[in-house]
Image (cartoon, rainbow, N blue to C red; front, side, top):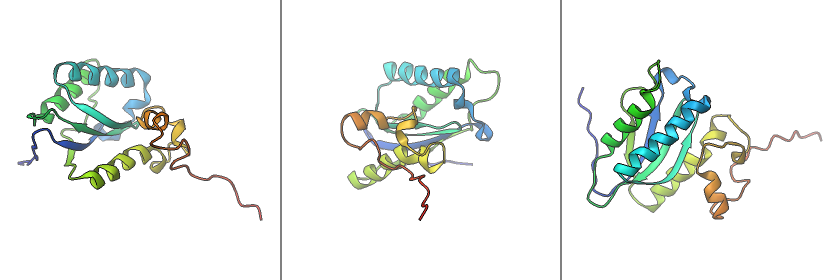
Length: 159
């Protein structure tokens, strides 16, 4: 099957990357540390900006902006996946990944909020501040989000 990827020099992309069979690989703190190290390692040799990231047990979402003349996000993902995979006995990743070229500021804002709201959407937490594997905390400290943004009200109505 031929997959067509949109390659925009210096583009901003939204990505979804999934574990094999949706296994909760990133519930393991060792695997989470490997993923963090993989991002650092790859960014040191093939830079990109990563304004948003959330890692859930079985998938992750992120936004990247590549350097001005660069279109090669595929090699970066291959290297990140390989870095995590090399220390694992089981296959960690689904083949491929899903990408979307971010078209404008509104598109960026929708994906940015989608990423940060994902732990609540999947029922992993009621309050985003309780999910540690997200850039949400950075944006709370920068006052982009309030600490209670996207909370689920779990209070029971007793009237």
